Length: 364
Image (cartoon, rainbow, N blue to C red; front, side):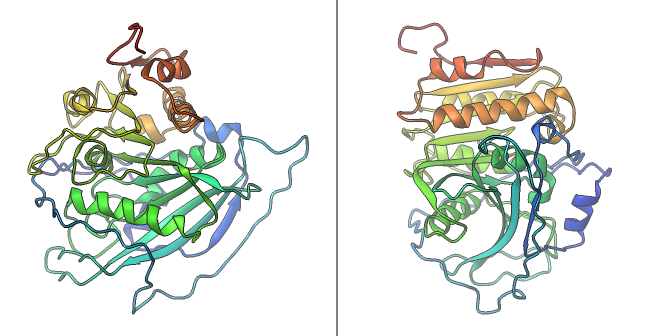
């Protein structure tokens, strides 16, 4: 079952709803106010709690990127440079913005209502990178929610890029709201889309990537995709060292088993007032995960989307916690659960509660 979207949509999301995807690059000045949440997005992503197709055990991820036979118009580049003064550059960085198109010929795009499916999967991918850093950079690949698209999450993506991460956010051809026909969900295929983007960017398509510092993140259905990558034996990607499942769940209709043991660290976040009832289901992701280093961020009074992308002090604090987690989990040698907790505390807002399954134990 899908839940209706919020009808109060900002202009950035309206552009996406009209199906307009801009190809090109722009640079915007990113200041500490950006990390505090200068971009307001008030869209509620719908959550799919229905079934998904069973996982294809013969999963393959191509090692090369193939362009579509019917490619989009050539990209145009428009760059606006902001000059800053002061000492050597450091975070928060200005953020460069680019959109690229990746194409996976090995898997199909499903039909969307009366719109027929077709061979291959085209992934229009938003790229955010810290200006002035040549790399190789740590990589974060982000999955959007159902009936949504990456532009809804600009403030979250920019927070990561401003902290020094190369960020890639593909538009899923199944569940986006930017394509004709009603969106559908296929969590395993979207998890594979994320792995395909990792493979594509390791080739240098968006600049040098540090292959030892790769994270995946997602919100709502995207958070469920990430949960599959962390928990499901069929979707584990051994290149990933950090997982951020934001208001996600273990999906009905996907058989599991949920016994994967990965070397990465897990960050699960959820609001106590999530309007789609994700609190117990997100906690289930945390409890089920076999990863040793893991933390749960519970946001008192937090909703489904606004607590990640809004302009409130609470939302700014949540974004800051995700950056702290990435820094700790992708640091030299990784981090234990206890080290993750110590990296996240004290939080920037009293409504944020950080817990782990072994808090206080010597093994942490």
